[in-house]
Amino acid sequence: MADNVIKIKRGADVKLNGAAPNTIIGKILSKNYAIKPTDFHGITPKLSVKEGDSVKAGSTIFFDKKNPVVKFSSPVSGTVKEIVRGAKRKILEIIVEQNGKNENEVFNKISPDKAGKGEIIELLTSAGLWPSVIQRPFSIIANPADTPKAIYISGFDSNPLAPNYDFILAEEIDHIQIAINALAKLSPGGVYLGLRNSSSKLNDLRNVKKNYFAGPHPAGNVGIQIHHTNPINKGEIVWTINIQSLVSIGKLFSTGVYDVSKTIALTGSDAKETGYYKVLPGVAINHIINNKVSDKTRIISGNPFTGLQISDQGYLGFYHDQITLIP
Image 1 (cartoon, one colour):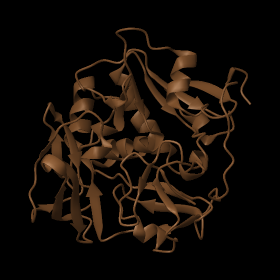
Image 2 (image 1 turned 30 degrees about the vertical axis):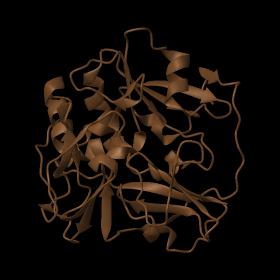
Image 3 (image 1 turned 60 degrees about the vertical axis):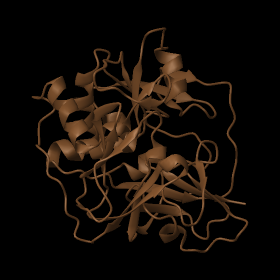
């Protein structure tokens, strides 16, 4: 354990059965993928496509009407199959039927070391990766025109049955480093990384300020880490990013390709087999649980505390790194 450890005393670790062992079960590809405007707080979606349009991975599906530079992209190539609307024609889901061709929009490759702040923001917004950047307070998508006092990333998750980032990101350190080098140019305060211990492979990352946390949940919550190291004062903002999103950012800068593939944990006492799957955001849940749950199983996209209960015909949320199956 590192010397400079911040000990969280208030909180509790809820013990639930069904944690995922460090095993990759497989890669899941579903026929349909959903991009859900409801995943993103505080935006007003404006469609860039209509039913029947062909799209590539990285093609803009919709943008924020209030801030058009903030774009949201398709995770796969295929055809816009359906635009699902709710009350007052609110857009709930854009369903893309993937074609199996893995066609990608190609963006400019740039070196974060040589690029300026404007170039970095332009690439992230044009490719549709900007929604990964969240502003505190309010937990809304950050405004690219703002300058945060710091950028925070939590390198571990203390929620019940949470995925083990040391395991799933062990081979992604190079991509994460590229992303950190880019993000460091967006804030005068630099990038902060919260870690559980100094033995983590994430401890090898450079150009980042590391803090170590011990204690029960919510030690892994980025809001707690900000509070204990660099509290947000009136008029200030801080940006946060899920650590798996750094992999996609690093790949974009090094390859010019929009690749939001990630590894999620299938967890919970009602899961027939727990473990990890490689997926894309918006994957159909039934391809992962394989219709092997009872009518009394609660299916949660995300963790038991903050996740969203969905049906077996639902889709994985954009920000979720686990699926939880509990009674």
